[in-house]
Amino acid sequence: MATGTPADEGDIRVEEDDILDNGSDLLTSTDHMSEDPDMEALTNRMKEIEEEAQLIRQMQSDVEKQMNMSTGSNTSQSVASIEDKIEADSRSVYVGNVDYCSTAEELEAHFHGCGSVNRVTILTDKFTGHPKGFAYIEFADKEAVQTALALDESLFRGRQIKVCAKRTNRPGVSTTNRPPRARGRGGARVIVKYIYAGYRARRPPR
Image 1: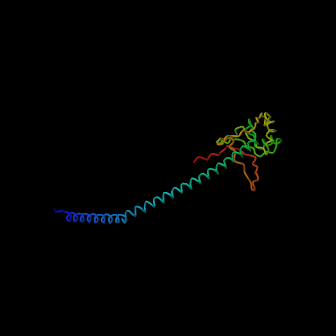
Image 2: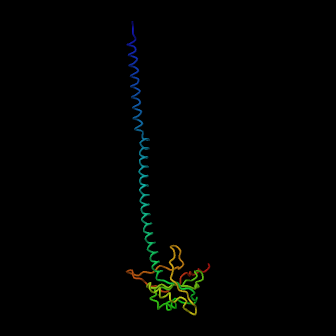
Image 3: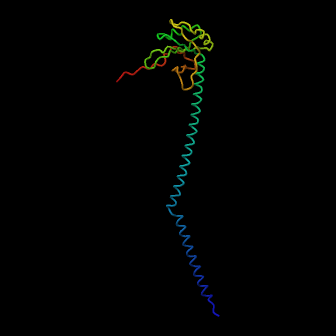
């Protein structure tokens, strides 16, 4: 009985050769893809983008650190400024019902017996420059405030004045318009006694 074995084996060998040839073609095609210059350029570009993104993140982090440091410094300065104001206000008195023609020198003379006067501030209208009728007296010592309170309802230029301890304004809300205390070399305080606060000269019309 005849069999088809030889022919079948030949056919099988041909099919195997075809498969090997096709596999070789696939490998060659894959190699070409890996060596594609466009793909390589794209890969390099992706790496560059990632490096740029990392650099941007680092820059943002550095900026945030600097902002946090700056905020902390400003906060410390603000707290110190508020503390200085509170300390100065504790050595000051409010004087009401002051005659509009009064001078800072006259007010200092009226309170001279209470203690050493650092500053006399007469509040004026910022538009007209006219006195508002009240003032602040800042002494060198807190003890002088108690002595000054005894002058409440005393006569000054023929008017009965009102004297009371100065209240400290909340941060950001100021009614004194008082400039900061001047400082000399070596931290020594420069005493400025006479201030007419609030007036701003108008510019002449064009």
